[in-house]
Image (cartoon, rainbow, N blue to C red; front, side, top):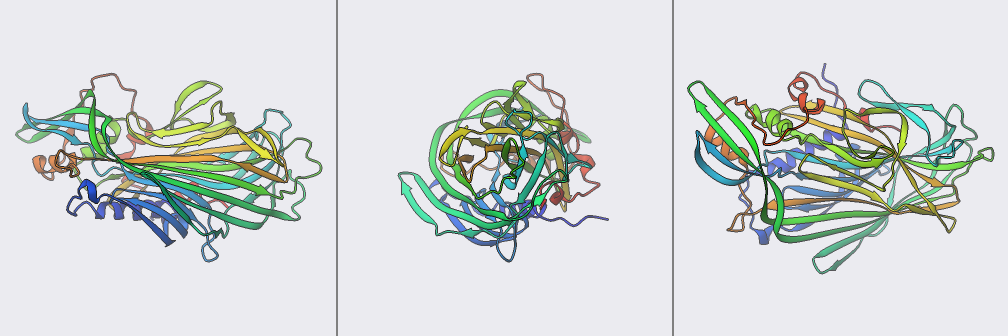
Length: 476
């Protein structure tokens, strides 16, 4: 029996429906592509309220939070169509068209969920919280294995009060400033924890949203050659990498800097080395259609190695992590204050932070950790929603008032042809050439690629089952 989809799955389905709904409309010119503010109630990410910025019909950025009617976490969200490069198309050696955007209705949801505050005793002295969040059956649950004492936690799933929004503009950059505040948040103890009496006085996230729209003539994008071999009874398609090219288009650059302030945490008097951890989920999910030619999902994402990864630096140096990493037995301390999400060629988004916080007016270091990178997926109607989830945390020194400043960033790029209109997608060109047939993919890579990851191998398997995405993030 199919499970009920909630939270992230619904958000992706709704977002994809909205995004795809605009594909049949007449293309806008560059002058008509504008940034539109959207506010009010939402059903995305389990419901609540939102402030979103929309760029044309292909990108949304903003913040979702809980209300009295729909208590919820705080999410920073970026939803966009991804242009994975440009391709020249040939049929039986005959040139058909140049520089078609490899768009293919591949939409990405990238988000950060602010989930828990956890008091821990740093008995190891390494400045991070040493524990394992239990991961069973493709999900993190609410069980913790403690390598050092975890005392109590506060869930950020609550009702948030929004301040007035201050709007301003500096040149091509538009800004929105507002805060979300929650008060008197109850404690829940861990098995080895202490006293749960009292409550956290206040949590405030002050958001500084900045969006810049500009026209660029030197955007560097991957370039491919796509060959269609038509024979009686068969049609084969092959991609080969052909370097990078520069292209013109409209670009939206988006940043959400937020000041996080925690006031009045009641640290346990028996805690000999108190620390405070902010636990977060960061995730990227990709919509891949199952109702079009077979090569769309299997070839585009798998063969172009765009299933997604996280680039970071930890004790092992600079490295790229994906869902094959799984859940770590112990957290790994990050050596640089950043995580970058992307595919092999495309950029999705960044999470960065300053390396210091203030605790009662004193500047002290912040230490970040990653708990694991795991796979998540769901099939709904005519699409597969496949992605990865990284569980991360930031550890702060103890204090009555603690403040810190992270940054969430992404962008959207709309390629334009010389007349100033958005380029028709490659998927449409191929649909006209191939019709509604199943295409057998034969790929000739111009350089050696690593084997496809389980995400990329799983699209066909995913058609036979559904999963509840709320299991990956809906923890109280």
